[in-house]
Amino acid sequence: MSSWKRTVSKVIGDAFKVHIVRKGRAGPLLEEDTLAQFLHTFEIDCVFDVGANAGQYAWMLRRIGYGGAIVSVEPIPTLARLLRSAAAKDRRWFVEAEALSDVDSNMTFNIMKNNVFSSLKLPSNVETPLFENMNRVVETIDVKATRLEDLYDRYQAQLQFRRPFLKMETISPWRAGRDSGFHASVASKAS
Image 1 (spheres, rainbow, N blue to C red):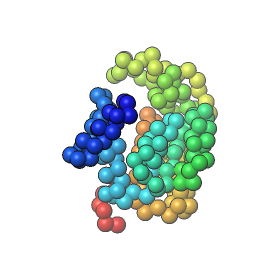
Image 2: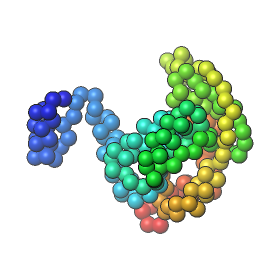
Image 3: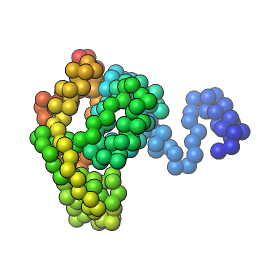
């Protein structure tokens, strides 16, 4: 968008208290606005970004003005290195190069052709054949797996957060246990 179009969009947007966006940009903008309002309303002071990939969610958090702690969890070594490089410039962004599971153990992790599908589980395309080419194993690696409860306790001791938020993009055989602290983390504003 040219400079004069941005200026006109801003003037009109400010005058009518609306966002003027390009075609195809409304969805992400709505997501960002909703997330910013959610984080503010519930006074979230730590976000656990599980399945962090290359840090897209953490970047969005910073872009919308969230200044609290971020704990990115990503088991793929190349992506974890990218995350660490980005987090080195942000004292409130922490990176764990591990997977989450219901047990602390070393496990085999399946890296798929499109790494967003990577998982501790083997792929199944029975229900979604559309992604069959992208959701196939191209490499297996050994990873450290930890329980969410242990990760939570480790960072609770370090950061003393009061209102954590768990964002998960995983396809793993993992369930949040009752001891994780997340089962009611934002159930009510009073705590």
